[in-house]
Picture 1: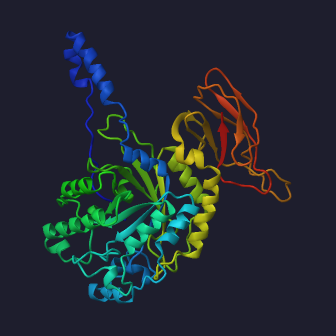
Picture 2 (picture 1 turned 135 degrees about the vertical axis):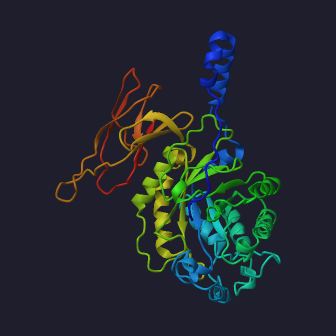
Picture 3 (picture 1 turned 30 degrees about the horizontal axis):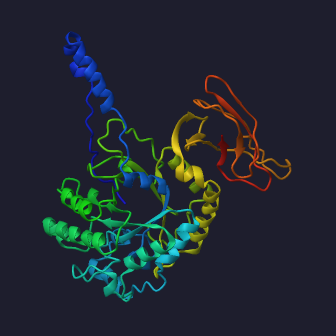
Length: 449
């Protein structure tokens, strides 16, 4: 995970350069205005991108030889481990506890609709059968099996969509530094295997072009091959910490927001509708780090998920399996607890669309076909002052831009009917009662009909 390449700018035709000429030709001005409006329109999402946005919430899995060291996915580089010494980790890679279906089952329980697995990370070790391209893969280790196949079969058994992360940077292949053209052919041949040996996949998630920002990565060849072999697969290229939300090649289907809440996408005038996805580790490393105790809380994750859906972006939460491929207990419990909240609010999370309705501070609205959902932050708990912190927050919340006539308002969690007022200007004020004692859902949702 590092910053990647420059933004691909989409050209938008305006009136500025034509205005003098248009004074003498009113018809041209009218036609130009129509063209400008057309050029500034938001494109319709392609089916694969529309499906991706409805997945909403996913799991990221970073797993490889580095997991045996328990010091994160960049251990080889950070600890300056010589290549020959690092390669010995292959000889102890058993994957004895890795069960693709167990991960998919946890994802489903957590309300996640897809999983992205690191089929190969920067260390260059592949979890799949490279079929002679290299012997630095799982079938040539004590694991003795194609772990990507196990993963895909597990996902399909649980109704989860499999996605493949694949590095473009490689610390193992000498050709990466010595003969880049040869390396790029090796990379394409590797991705070809992923596109042809595992059935239909949800997408490919690339990471590493930032390592050679001035190189010709021949992405046209790579993406063209994917479009031929997996036409419905999402193509995602990580833009990294320093370039969140930027768009690279025109074939990219989603931009990324690494460890940062997404900002609204301005899609006016784009050649193609582009989705967005925020990725976040559950602690402060992507790969397993035994002494990393700095975990996100359920509150953090619920608020980040809401912040993503507010702008129509997906949220993908990472876990680093242990040396043997087991899902750590803490992360499993964390995912499942957030899943309880997701289950309570499934309809707006998966099907809700960003709304022009504006709420105070962090509050926002999502809309489905016939309903509005108000996401309310920072509520207090109703309870005796001797046992409950009185932090405020309950009371009227006013939203602007509510055009439809409102008939009812109620909390999704307990169906409590709420008082509300609506005026002709589109202002809707809802009396947001505090959480009942014994309850705190972090973000509380009002269903408006």
